[in-house]
Image (cartoon, rainbow, N blue to C red; front, side, top):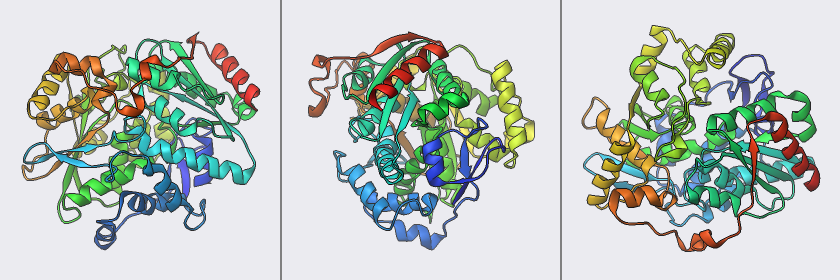
Length: 466
């Protein structure tokens, strides 16, 4: 398995190199040179496997010979052993055709645990074999940071620095990051929004001397390994509801487009997915593009679903590359135009091709509260992101009324207790392993949205731990 950059100027490379590099040298994102495609018999062989075994089978299609026989299987078994339900990613029926795919039973109560618990182990294995040390930098709108820190804390071969937007995560999300006091972990609160944090991470990767000096790697969904590790839960849930003999639709609350792109990847591999429904909040750039071909960045407005408070959706570049016939030059031109002008003109035929599969819907904070209240009355507690997904599934369902809709329930309600209490009058309790979260010591640094200041902090942290 070889990988190419969406901008066409980086040399193809193997999975191990992609895992460690994160972002391509030309600023693009990595994708498989050719997509693995499974037959009906292949899908049926996966049905009924325990989740770790299924995940290993799917992910192995992308890792080539990076891991010796049995190693990936053991890593998957270890990564998901700490989840609080044996099903790992259980389905809960909401109505006659809607099912919540609960992705919040991992150690940090969010879907990011599926990929990052595995990536921490992949990094450790590869770095130990190579005798190398890396510095991981990541940006988070709330959930990636805590999941990455949980997966990487205390590991000997890496340091990790996570940037989060000051004051723009929930208190639980922030404390899950800032109360981890392992020496190899540093948290930085950036005076800006998530897009500013994400831009700083990309700028560090594009600073070639700094990238080499720090041996940088990424845990954001710009890292292809993150996407590969999220594909299995779409496969497992679809098989549980009758695929490949019937079509499935997925509704995914998303801001950075990585989670829904993993669902797209499963479809590209042959899983019968009829519709991908994108749930957005007031920061509705993805919904605006899907419904009206309007990819225009606007100021980020804080919302009740902060993990989706994003206007520059990094993983959209991967979809754009595919929509443009894998033309790296056209993709690079479009991405540069978006960076320079805040607008991404996409020709009508390309946009219409995408809307044959994608549907989008944005919900306001008031609509989010109403949806959380409705679900609570039916006996299902939902966080505000999941509520955006269920609301979108009602507003923009697939054409065939018989098609089951699987909604990605991306976070535990206890991560957003203020929003849940506002909607339902009940404040959700943290699970036992986090019960003392508000009593734990916090440690983080507030820095301006300035590349020099951030690079200096990363350099000081990495050198201290090197």
